[in-house]
Length: 197
Image 1 (cartoon, rainbow, N blue to C red):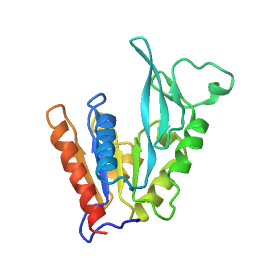
Image 2: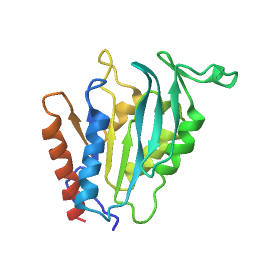
Image 3: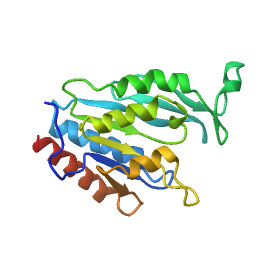
């Protein structure tokens, strides 16, 4: 039941907002609602989750929608291998681990109804294969729901800017006051895409 976007409708839904506003939670709530209302929906993708030790955030992990997980970034790693890894703030980004989990989730196959990517951000874009895979998904006409960071100091990451300015993209800016309404809006848009196939 692979679906294409209806003429004139957006098939790329991007959620942005400041760190900690609840972008991942929103995406997961939309997915939960979709799985309840459309139990045969085929969704591929991943989300990122904080790794905490007590009250301290020590890193992030990638969790695929089919339940596999692995490290994305950590402030605790200090192996000889990690010495060459890119750094974002205090975190070392494990590009190889990220690619081994995320890239298979972006493979376009028959029967996929929706791709979910949380997130397309600075850490993820250290993978040279990741953004081309995201662009292939956009070109496939399969609906795409993703989170992107808010521009820092008015400057967007180049890959994020390309997504934000994509002709088929609709950007939703999340804030603490509009989270519930935003979930309903995004859910409705995806349901419309499903029905218009």
